Image (cartoon, rainbow, N blue to C red; front, side, top):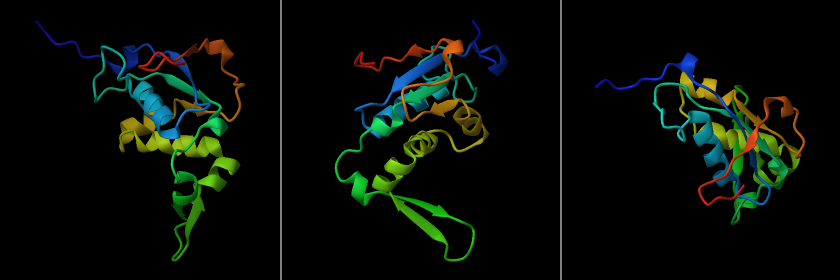
Length: 147
């Protein structure tokens, strides 16, 4: 009996919507990262890109628990000496909540060429309207059965 090994070209990719309204940012990012990697599929193989497309809506309504809004920072270095920029998460969630969600999901993917291919299939959107109705995305239910 031989072991089945999926090829990246033969993987069928579905489209899923995750609603982040009222949910913690990290919990939503974990669900998106698992869908992007394809860990929910029975043909999952760690070295093959077998994930799906993910649309995260209502990124502006995601919550950060505890004191993360005031104590957590996003650091960015410009490349020049002494130019380390830091932004507090309360300012980041007001200015670009989709960027905060994108960074959270990217940090949960592999740090190699496979992870770079997977993050391209993520769409983080501020409102509830998206332009991907033609792909017929379906709402993703998490382990508890919540949408």
